[in-house]
Length: 563
Image (cartoon, rainbow, N blue to C red; front, side):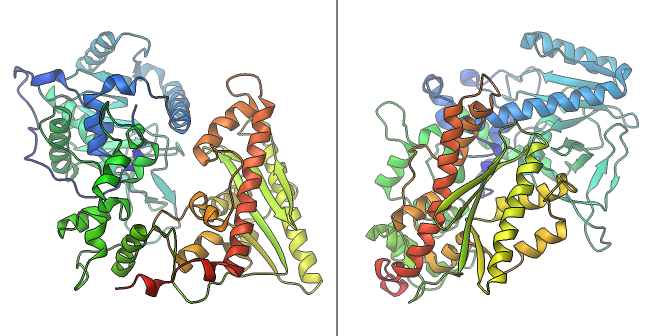
């Protein structure tokens, strides 16, 4: 089981010398027969070590529902891309049957490559016993001009964003989906995806081994939008890939030691809460060590270790000038966070008073979405009454437009009535990124349906002072040693969710059962989702009241922990 590749922290990786670009095909295999695919190049090195050393324990771990759902969505996306590409020019394609045994798929792939087939889908390249490389690719495109093949991956995330043309901007290379013709594309901007570049470099090295790599030194990625191929120049990527691969294969083979460190990936990693037999979990080991990553996760911890700070206590005792290479906000706050953790304080108040915008009429809003398919539920709370606007038709569905239109109409009516009565109005959410995204997306997708606003109407609302992000209010008011998520902050204010498993990842599985994706609809899961959504909006309301009336008395202030 692998973590979602989005969890890569992006911090520095200490690497030995680069791996050979084209190993001797007759070289003797190294010990333990370890193999590595491109997914293992991004993410936690210690997890990679534990996965390799204790595969029997992984077999007992139930896969995270969110990871499973993302995999299923990716499989469906790739099938759609395959069907449309092959249908456009069936005579140019060889499609490798995924039902074949691995050896048969490899043989079919190598036969197609040697025959010079223009386009190959579902290629599986030979495992390399000496280097440990293994991997496959959705799409291999023959380079008609230079010879060899260009690897093109199909991914279930965005690789570009739309934008208005600007001559001053950098324009990425893209190509038409059905005819390879790379050119500068002024209509999109690049979304950096290191994982995609590493995978393409991995595949390029595997093709290069057999003299099948295009000398153009490029690869491609077809993203979620399925509207173009983003072209990646691999010239500068390969050297970094070689170093990263050499490091990771050495970890898998047990030739390099690793230590746990808290990174975003830990949220979904089985080793975070469970260690190998007789050993503590990563969380337990870090707590014993009082490791600095517990309060400065990811690349922050790497910076601190570079200055000799390995424990929370060492960070709390920091004196002197701030590190010149610290790029994670005020360094004083990192020191205060360490001191608060030692004192057991879940929050530290930045100012003498705590404030949050209040209004005569207040509405709390929280949405529930499924993958990139849509937002099926807009939950609201007004005067203590919970009101959901929803569809139980499986997404994607036009009925989502009906429920969104009803939600927007109701919200704007409440707002208009408040204004007409001479009262102030505010709508609240927690971390507005998702709400803003689906407000805009829903307005675009369902334009013209009853009650659905225009893009300009959405923008006017979300840019106004009447749309309040409680996450921003918390960020501005408090330092949070244990994190700033609603599930971390609301319990400090005295709120608790009815469902012990409540969370975004878990809700994905509940939704699948609620609408009957895999079996007949489970109505109990609909109730579960509604209660979860209701608890979220009530949590923001409780948090707001707490910040207004009690937080200043209950939360220690910054001077109590200052340097």
